[in-house]
Length: 134
View 1 (cartoon, rainbow, N blue to C red):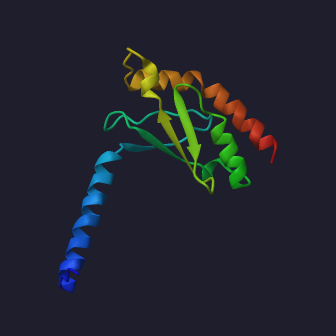
View 2: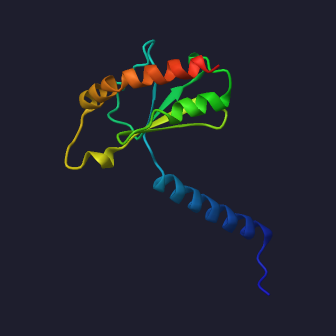
């Protein structure tokens, strides 16, 4: 049986764990930005730092009665260009632009904001419908 000094075992474990952590960080590095729904349920991507992989939206200002209602509302917003998910407690949503669905096109921030402007009415109608159910 191989016997290593206790300090060697901890050092080896630490190196292994930090190596795995470093690999996980590298593999899942995403750019994140905060955005918020406007009063008319518009979403506008921020100007700074280029396009993000994930946009985080605080849901508390929308005033949903419970987490289930917030999650159902957020799930109703997804389409083939933007995917929305809410966390388990319904306090935060993530919007992920579906860049892969652009095909050969490249959209800049202005094009994405124009798209979000076109679907704003759907956001607003869904929001009003969910508020009426409370």
